[in-house]
Length: 602
Image (cartoon, rainbow, N blue to C red):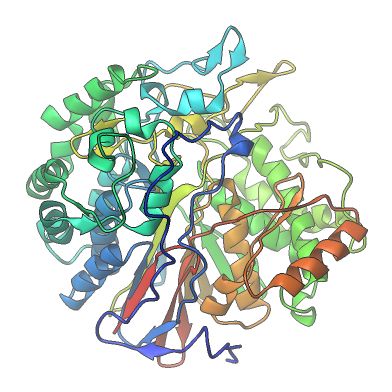
């Protein structure tokens, strides 16, 4: 296989220990004294802060590999693999550690989706640890006077908190695929929580731009100085509360979290939140169950692409984008060039139109999943793509269903870009691609027992009906909100070829799709593909990412797209991709230069 390499970016490193990582650009020594202004709408919310764009080296190993969004988490994962653990063991250790070291993005107070691949029989299993709405949830809970709440007013506080699903899902996956004792998987996180870890530049930047967290009970004193400034970069954060919580779960399993004192404390913190008291109860906690679902797979070129089925829209929409591009020979076009970018944006526009109308919790509403990704449907829908001209304005969703008439109204809600992705491949060739989230940066801002609770209920549509038609993704008791998380596995001849995923809110789908096209159509290695500027079109303007070193690409692509009728916006598009790719002699791991991720391999 040919792999395009940039020597300065993609020095392949064979390592048995942690490689040196580039130092992030230092932030200002102190946060501004004034609180940041509150964005007026969801679209005004800036993307999650990056650590700057620091080139990463691809990492190769012949035995096993782990990659996560924070070096502490990756080290926890590789420790489990070196101890003979499975890919699931590594993923659990990484996810639990991220609760501590990347608290703004994911953790045991949130949910996750996991794809597992078994090398022995080429089996795929999709684990759904998505949060659920409490029993007392109602479809109008985010309306005030009949109008949708201001988005950030809804996010912060107890009303947005769903029943966390991550730990129950991790426990279920461990029972089926774990090799090491459950208790051992918590050791790295507990040790860090007790002894402390250094506050990173990325976490500092996020703390500095948050207008609510300094006033949040518990979290405010943990992250900020008494005068409301973020604690300086390098401050050692010690979290004995979280260490105690993790010890309880390590000893007693997920029951220690979902029943008893921890569950009661979570319910009380939600109901007595400093803003927007919530509806979650201890009974809701005890009733939570993860789901085992069939992975959603479809063809692309000579590969099989597998992702999460609903309630995640990740799998359906990634497959839709790729299926819509199937008629176009992208391999003959310049990789990431203006012509390919136009086709990608137009395919994304069509795929997001279908996503917004049809995808929701399949256990509550009928989702035409198989029809949305059927090659025959996508081939017909691809005829709407004009290689020379952008669609005028928003496009309509396709008519999917037995009667050819949509009963659903479009859901215009999105999800915020504060999530985390991790990948692991063990010595037996088993693999995990897992995305975890608490939704917005710092979730609901509700702090309990050393961790933050999610605000995933704001992933539901605030408006339950439009023009007399129900919105599929409206709130309902026990329902799982639609997600954009897209943990993805690529198979070639039934064997694992690649595992990839990203944070990034509703743009996750495009971040993952863009990397797949670069690797599968252009034979680029995963690190080169991740390094490329991001592109987005969620059935609206086409967004281009400014990246140092890619200025000519940005200028040329913008002019070309505008000539084809695109409305082009230039903005930060801070993905956080992690990937593993099969190469001669083993595996190549890649991490996003936009964040502080790390790959380790042996």
